[in-house]
Image (cartoon, rainbow, N blue to C red):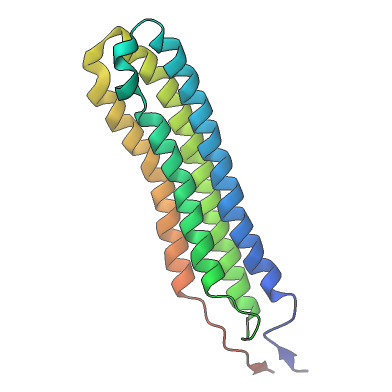
Length: 165
């Protein structure tokens, strides 16, 4: 019995990857921004001169959403209504979108918690700024790992539709 490798529902998985990359990574970025913003507001009442330095966790949380946007644009760019789209490619795009989205969620969550605590600690002891930056970099790189895996998966996409026996 022969089966076609490009069923009509295959793009559903690709668009699921687009949605996962954008939505889940944006949830992580939003949480990180909100949680770090709470710390900035709390620390800013005591040390308003440190507010600009304290915005670093918010900026880093926003970058997490950019990772999801990059992956969503790459996946969408390889889809076209006039060309074949294999089930294999759909699953690859779903996996790459989920990889970026879920790692972005974890990174945003980490940046939010660390950003809140470190901003408050920085307001009490300014020598902790370098420590805060290092911890935030290690939190940010979690999202970057997901983007790298997503990019690698995306390069493996092949829209060859063949008849398999």
